[in-house]
Amino acid sequence: MAASPKIDEKKFEQWIGLQLRIGVLLAATIVLAAGIFYLKKYGGTAPDYHVYKSEPAELRQITGVFHSALSGHARGLIALGLLILIATPIARVAFSVVAFALERDWLYVVTTIIVLAVLLYSLTST
Image (cartoon, rainbow, N blue to C red; front, side, top):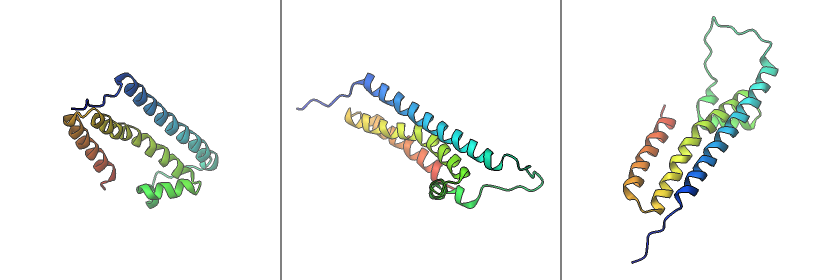
C-alpha cells in the first residue's frame, strides 16, 4: 500500500502566511493609491449629505468593479482593492482544501469545503 503524501506543515504555514501578507499588502497599496487619486480629483468638492447617494450600480457587482477599475476610475480601483482584501482569506481556505486533500485528511477536506461554500455564497448572494 502506497504511503499517503505528506506536506511539510512548517512550509504550509509559511506559504499561508506569505499569501495572507501579499494579499493584504496588495489590497492596501491599491486602496491607498486609488484613495489618493480620488482625493486629488474630488477632494475639493463639498459633500452633499442632504441626499443619500449609494454606490453606482456598476460597483455593486464583481464584474462591474473589474470593468470600472480597468477603466481607471478611482472608485472602481478602491472597490477592487477591497475585493482583493476580501478574497485573500477565501483563497487561504481554498488552498487549505488542497493541502488537506494532499494529506488525505477527508474530514478536514469536507469541513473546509463547507466553510469555502459558505464564504463564496455570502460573497456572491445579493
